[in-house]
Image (cartoon, rainbow, N blue to C red):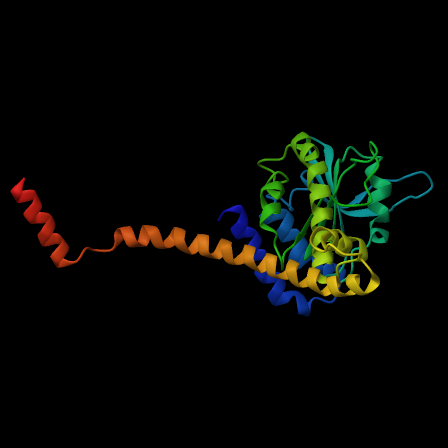
Length: 264
């Protein structure tokens, strides 16, 4: 089973069992541990590789625990904090990750509710966890572009330098995609004005802006649909050509070919 198949298999489990999960502990057992073990490839039953309830005392705060720490050669590589499935993952839920990040050797941290996984590093300031993730995975809506980056976090391919080097681009591309998605649903005034000014030669009045709000939203929606249709057509034509090549020729065509060969 390849990496993507492991992801989709876990996604099917989340979709099927998610509604029945009522606690954080059940979320960890049903979804997070399989993600660590099966998808990322770390042995959750080896405490030298995956340490549950990882303790890292900080100043006067004693005995606080992070849900999981993924280790390599005795050094913390990844910290994971879990919430119950369905619970929102705001930055306020990552307070322990923030505290532990700068006092361990970890360069990667993950905040998850078993369905959504948010990956953080320290791009903005050394040894201080960023407030915004560089990568996000939703198992019920897997972004195909995130899959190659996720493989870099697996045990067999883990390369922290490669991950950090790619994280900056991933972070901003992800944020831009969210902005675009929001504009498709409800374009703001500045966004509408950009397009209106390119195609409308008159003065951009309030009435014109209101008119172009709906025109811009409709154009964006149609553009995205066109892109999807083009990809589908391309995929279909790519599968049709090999199929056509494998079709048997008609008897008449075979006879003509034979006669040509004999005449030669």
